[in-house]
Length: 304
Image (cartoon, rainbow, N blue to C red; front, side, top):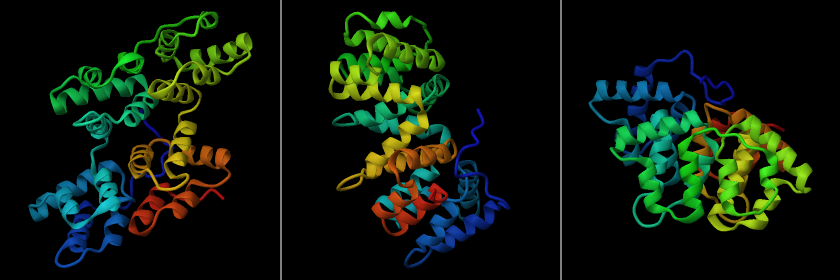
């Protein structure tokens, strides 16, 4: 599927060798020229970054990602290393780390599985199996429980089953929401949400809010938001990653990198519309240094 609403596109004229040489020069010897590193990596697309890594290996016999890890630190390092991760493995890698070790990162499971298309989920499962020789569904069921687990499994099943809005009318048990939202047919579900409003007098979000709680509630709401509009969902995710005291840098980096070649222009538009300021301005206010410079390059412009 070719996405054209990203902020990062193929850089032209592109010369992988020249970029590899410039990166080596920026990191060689004492001190690192962070500006040179970010200017190259944040303005090339993922396919070009992979070519640069391979030229770097050929020219210098060194691993570019290892060099970035040893030369950079903190959030800036995390961002640059994330940019280097091959696009096809990005989501599988994030999920693996969300269910690794002590404690599960429900936020990451929710964000990825609620927002990806059935075809994308299918692909994530295959990549996970190939790269980690493990079954993603087994891993997730081993680390989660209850209705939250059940909804994640439904999202991993990627089947499309249709039903009538009237089926929402009686009873409010979680199973019903899970069955309905698990159908994944976007156009059908949008009609069902409208019909539900007509039948019940409530938006489905209000009912979910009233009837469920905790991780399940967050997951169901994320699914509903993504059915209504994926860019609006990510605009909100970015907004709350920066709002208030402290920044959720992991979320900010994950969303900026994973959507930069897909729909970040649409996300910017929704952000401006829904939060009365631009994404660019919020990043500028909330971050600093080379980390900020790189995020602003990925953002690709102001909307004011």
